[in-house]
Image (cartoon, rainbow, N blue to C red; front, side, top):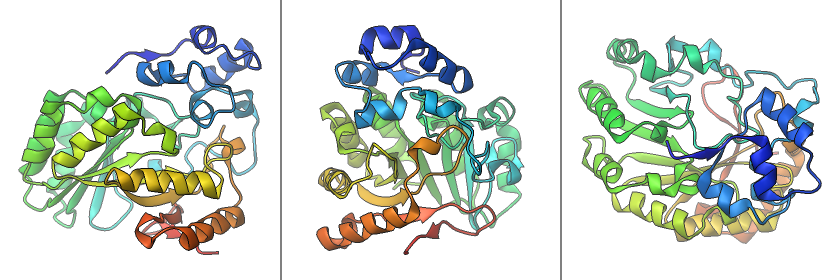
Length: 319
């Protein structure tokens, strides 16, 4: 794992945010620890507290306000475990919580209270493989987390080799935030792994919420992934004060498309405890996506979706 900024006092010393108090940052960090990759910590040092990138990672007193309907497990992860670290919600595919580690802690993370200590696949890998071997209806494995690229290339290669040995599996998907938060992680060894597996082309889903996340270093990382032949998709979360405008969402789609990434999903906020201040009303979300459809070609307009516990797929929101 690359180094990260985790100390609230150090964050305020480096970021110089006069309107933010150490008491507030420390209290919010006690609920959900502060973590910002060194790459981002350097980029955000000269920006204000309301900058859309800073807002995603800066612990806030707003996180301490309890709101009805905001819960610890808003998408029902703990109800669908097939084995420790293996979730199955949808037919034909299963999700591996590969590791608890992540290069950053997004303040709206829907897994901010997930019991990683007991349910990370890296600690229960034989049981995960047994569950996958025992169910030939599963054809796709999704490596998620945390962030699966937090694992070393050696560990990832072993995981991929083990998955390749399961005949029923035909697709591999990886969800990651690394290209925009710690882009040096996308190295030659990782790219060789992604391009050389029998699952190629691997589907890589990037989490990007704002065009400014796609700085030159991130753009190089995305280009490296694209050169492996991977299918690159993005998913974003609609966040108050980050990307809740037509202009910002259009710029994000344009920036993704220019780098060969298909804007796939725009999620309304999963109602996790501590994130209520990020929520955008559904009617407003629908209006924003409707505006995008009049402004952009269809392939640059993400699907507006919500995850509903017990449903067999993401639920499209159309108004």
